[in-house]
Structures are given as structure tokens and as C-alpha cells.
Image (cartoon, rainbow, N blue to C red; front, side, top):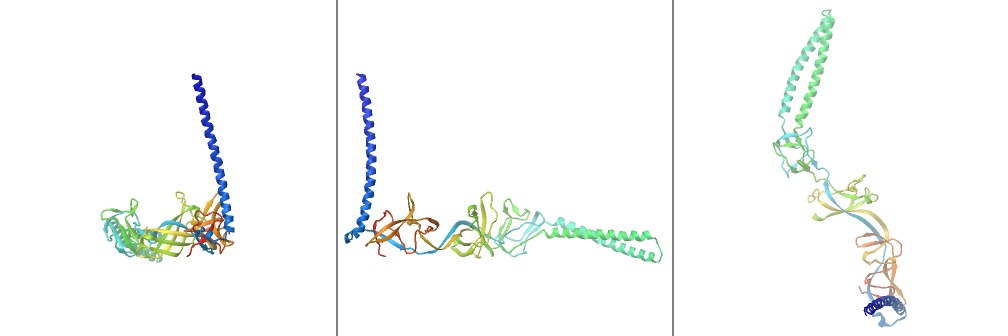
Length: 394
């Protein structure tokens, strides 16, 4: 009895598997048959569209918008983000090393002229050294004058046959030694005077004191960590700089047209040129620097974000079409054109090779389209080859 049940269950399982495989096979056959029927229907519709001249048929034509194609100048840009820099900005620093600040003569926001005194560093020790050197110099000058007078007297007596030659030679030697010492002392005084002058910190450019981060009693080194202690910004000469990816190295050159936009203040310049393109690649960012001069404007601030469009490609006469009209299938990219066949207008698929894109337009490179072709620019969705169409009234 148990054996009969096992055999029965086994047969039932085999029957179910057989039914499932049969159904799968039948489904595949139906799908193939459906695809064949769809192709046949479309072919018949196309043939009927060519042969049927009845007015009623035109009511079923799909409504589309057409645009005649013309050649135009096509331009491609590299869109990047950069910043504004002031060419004459300055980080002030001491010329001969750090010093203790005695007085600060400028504050943030002040207008500064070139050569204006900004800081005074402690100069007490240097003044003492200078006073000592000048006192020693005066003593040397008296000694030299005495030595020269003595040398002249001995020269006169020697010519008259009075005195020893050795005394004359010693007098001359003494004069030369004192002259050398005096020259050295004067040089030392010049060096100390230069050190004294360096305790006065002057502005090397005109502009506005953007940063003044120093107070009396602090040590002025020029930098406090990574921040300047005094920064002067001159906005009379501005430039926009950008880091360009390495893969554009062969396209971005000095003199290339560039468009600069500062969206925050609604400023735009369309006729600028690249004034400098860097000749080396930064190994950490794999970029190089490009810059262009921009007009001065009170609203522009250094380090402000700018949008930079560098022209890297231009074709004077080519066909460019809306990018959204380009579709794809397993054979490639195509568009739909309107074609008059008999007394009907039908949609015809045209395969194309596309190039660069500029905004909403894309370049057609292979010559598949020509001037006068009527491109379907609206209603192209779900069109099929040979479908009857009619143009929307403009």
C-alpha cells in the first residue's frame, strides 16, 4: 500500500513539471507570434498609408512640430568654477626678521597708500648700537686727521734730510690702517642704519587694509600660523583663476576665448581671453592653472566664486539640433525626419553620429542631415518608421 502511494506521488510530480515546461514553451511561441504580427501590422499600415488617399485617413495622422535644418556656427565650452584674485594684494612682513611691535598706525578697512607707515617695531637696542658706532667713528676721524698731519710733517722733514726713513714709513702705514678702520666703521653704521630703518614697516602697495591682526607688545613676523598679520588688498587689477583638469591640457591655451560670470552680483563678460595657461600639472590635483583678467568693479571681492566657460571647440558651418530629439536603439542614435511620399507626409528614421554638446544643442558630425531637412522636434515620442504625420499649425 505504501509503495502505491510513493509511485502515485512521483507520477504527480512528473506531470506538474511536464505541464510547466509545456506552458513556458507555449508562452515563448506566442511572444514570437505576437512580434511577427506587430511587424506585419506596421508594414501593412505603411503600405496602406501610401495607397489610401481618403480624407478620413488624414484624421489619424500624428500631430508633430517640424523645424527646417540650417547650418550654423557651433561652439563648445568647458564649464568650470574658479575664484577672483587681486593681482596687487600684499601680505606685509618685516624685511630683516621679527620684531616687537611698539605702535600700530592702521586698522582694518583703512585706505592705505603705497609707502605709508603701518607699524613701528622696537628700535632701542639698535639706536644704542648706532650711537656707539657714531661715537667711535668720530674718535677715528680725529685719530686719522692727527695721523695724516704727523705723516705730512715727517715727509717734509725727510725731504729736508731730517729724521729717519723708517719714521716716514711708519707714519704712512698708520694712516692707511686708520683709513681702513674708518671705512669699516662707516659700513657698520650703514648696516645698523638699515636695521633701524627696517623697524618702520611700510605698505608696498596701495589698497585697503583687509587684515590687521597685530597689537603693540606682540611680535610681528608677518604670519600668525597660516594667516597674515597684515594684508592689503588692491582691487584695481583683478583676475579670475581656475584649476583646469589635466585632460583639457591640449585644448586650453593662452588667448582662448572665455566667458566669466559672477552670479552673486549679476556680472558677466563674454569677450575675455585666457591671459595665462599654466605649463605644469599639479601632481596632487592633476590640474593646471588658467587665468583671465577681468574689469575692476567695486562690487567684486577677492576670492569670490566665478563661473568660467573656456571655449575649446568651434565649427563655423555645421548642423546642430536639439539634444532631446536624438533617440537610441540597438543600431545606434537616430532622429525622425518628415518626408513627403505621395500625398502623405510620413516619419522616417535617420541614423546620425553626434559630436559635442552645447547646452540644449548637439552637433551632427557625419553629414547624415543636410540643410532643408525637416526635423521632427515635437511629437517624436513613440513615432515609428513610416507613420503618417501632420504638421501642427504654428
